[in-house]
Amino acid sequence: MRPRYKRKLRLLRLPFEWLGIGLGLAVFTILTRRGLFRLCDFVSRVMYLFDSRGRGYAMDNLRIMYGRLPANAEKIVRRSYRNMARTVGYAFWTCIRARKRCASAGEMAPSGREFLSRPENRPAVTVSGHIGCWEILSQLAYLEGHDMMSVAKDIGSKGMTKLLMKARRSIGQEIVHADGAFRVLMAGIKSGKSLGLLVDQPVDPRDGGIWVRFFGHPVPVSAAPAFFAAKAKAPIVVAWSRPLKDGRWRCEPVATFRPEEARDIWGMTQRCIAELEKVVRRHPSCWVLNYRYFRKEHKFSEKDAAQLAAREAGASGAANTFSRVVAT
Image (cartoon, rainbow, N blue to C red; front, side, top):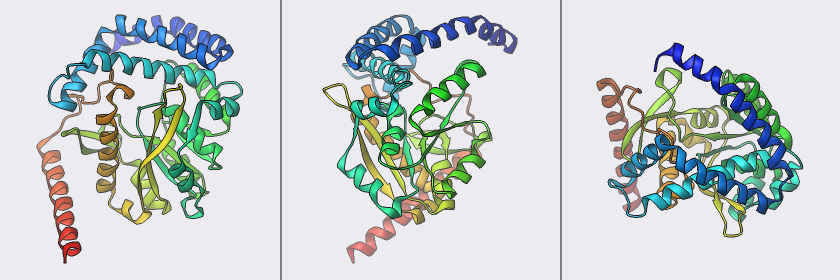
């Protein structure tokens, strides 16, 4: 699509985007949690019907994940749309009475509470992806006493992005715009603030992405969690928010890593992605499937392939050495 056409299309979309944001802030905030989910479920069904491109991405992602299309692929994708709609609805819903609503909608698993309560884990780098209710993760950590900083990308126009960032700050956590976030996040973690980072979406290598394996495919992702953990000597916890049968979410850690392990930037980034991959494989309907995670425009050159192969060989050699030491 030509840049000029894209600009015109964005201008045409602006009134509708503002209308959507306005309705979200006006309608979602006055609903009960049950009413919120009913409305979100209706919206997700409409989205599923009209988002043919997104459905195509979702099916492609499932093929990559499992090597074939699962027999219940349509059911998985429908539930993925529902999970996404509920998460976005929740973000609007907590624009008012954020602490009370967050506490009623989510809970921290005992293992997560234990990790966050240890003095040596302040600050920490929390890592997750767009799975479960990613909006509630940093909020629950904040309610456990951690000053949290998270990153937000542009959503629509600059005005809408600013409005949504203001709404997301309502619980007390600090939201940093993606542009120029590095210095702010570094200053924040060095001052004792924990970071909440989502790393499952591709990052162009020109913007700092490094190549790792995601479902067996080379994908460039952010190395920020490992970098910040290494520089600030902070631990890393990989976590996600599991949907519960009563409509709430439970924040569950799936892996923790010591600060010294983050010195291997590539190795730690690959391990974080591998932990998220395990969760997605077990709970595919909780992941945002209608997104292009495996983009062809991110050129995987011969040099990139050789470098990735060398890193994987080095990691495999280190693992084999460790296994021999343990065995003896």
